[in-house]
Image (cartoon, rainbow, N blue to C red; front, top):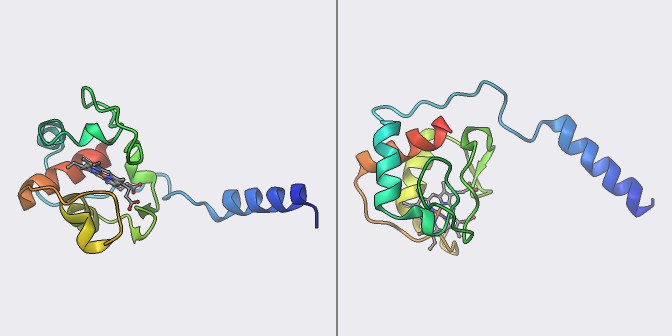
Length: 122
Ligand code: HEC
């Protein structure tokens, strides 16, 4: 099979399998406050490594851009995009993915929930 045919089939597969979370998926973070989350993201300087819409100066290109996050199927390409898992990941990614370049960042559980709520609001 030619390379072009393989690429075409791969592309079709991606489109057909719907490799995005379904339209209308609205993850809910219990007790998460998105407005507060935006402030925590700025305070903890996550934007040094990430592009984060709505957070001033968040233009880092070390990690992936965190836009339209609720449409992502996986967190860091590994874990289902679920509020509890995201809350844990933003605080302590290395405990879940030991080889990740995303550092553990000191914050409270409540701050992590607020961050997750903000990311899902984008
Ligand atoms: C030193 C750079 C750095 C800092 C600071 C940083 N991150 Fe990350 N982040 C990364 C990298 C690199 C990845 C990719 C990790 C992977 O795929 O294993 C990542 C991944 C992520 C992901 C998963 C992205 C995806 O595609 O699913 C989220 C969410 C995230 N970071 C949120 C945050 C938040 C919130 C903060 C601040 C509290 C933060 N990051 C601070 C480097 C950083």
